[in-house]
Length: 123
Length: 399
Image (cartoon, rainbow over the protein chains, first blue to last red):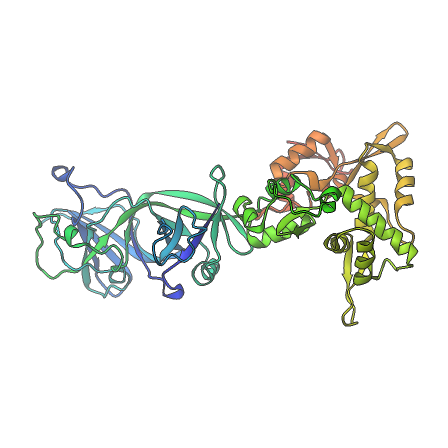
């Protein structure tokens, strides 16, 4: 079978997504565990100077990193179930496969924090 | 990680990518944060982007039991998932994943400091991404599919349209079933000397091809045609008069000849190719089994049309010879009948012979194309090379 990769994002105007990448895993405080993460703030991203250096403060930890351009871009694909035949606006109802892939974005840069966190000592 | 946020307006990725010096933004989980298995990150070369974004000529191909490949117009790529132990927090554009009225207020115990700080939401922690690796098209299956029901003389005699189309394939069927790009599929069909008959891609039965080629050669004697300059219209009309369908007559010229570039307008001329004609008759002779070299050469040369120059070396990749005492025997061993993946190819070769001299081996591996691996690399990977003395011929055996 064949799955067509479509692009509804409009070619060169394909929206750029961003990645904030850090080592390890972000975990919630033990007392918060089990509750939904939605809307919860993770931390604060800061660009202290005009250089492409960034800090990410999570709780009492600070990460230092920089903006990097990916050697090869990442394309964000989304699996889409085509609208079932019969509904209006289906362009090609006869040969619709089970899924299609839609290009919804492209990622060219990420803010990379590759060092271990530094503890912020409260004064 | 202590505060929760309410329905403040979220920023998109540009807030992260174009951050002003001496500024800060909050990073938070999106109200629709989750594993989002429908999202796939695919790493690819910049040069493939236009195919994907502008021309939309990229597709994934494969049957459910095969590993999917990605095909552009001309190339095939294997797809590999690369996981990461880092956390890649994904920031979507703000117009995607917009909140419905309900989800906006799903957290009643929202505590948000109203300090006007901008918030960038994370939709997913990406588990890794897909990578592409250029691979050779998987064309063995094409050969297998088309060999199920070759077009035969008997079928050509039947005028009626047959209802039974099992084992016959149209172009879209081949695209569905064969893991190759459109360009590679077209080349594969050409290499198999396939042609489209009534919308189905077919290879023509060898005996039928033998009939029509011999008829063409007979006609060339009767009509005193030059085999270096066969007039297409004339040849086709004579063969049609002899009872062959027009498309098969034309196909015969394509298979055994090459077009002569000719300035004369409105006239297509063809030159018969000595190697292809020679290979055809060698195959026909050896179909019944191996033969002594002298007998083979005698019979072969007798079948070759007069004026056509052939030599035994034209049969490289088609026949092998064995020495038994003083006698040399010839037998058919066709490179085109061997698998096209290197591991399977070498396994078959070493099953045929445990030791190969380079001059014998080369015709059976020169068509192997593995992106990123040279022919020396292939030999290193799949063979053991022995050379008793520095100036002796190297011999290749299985690893």
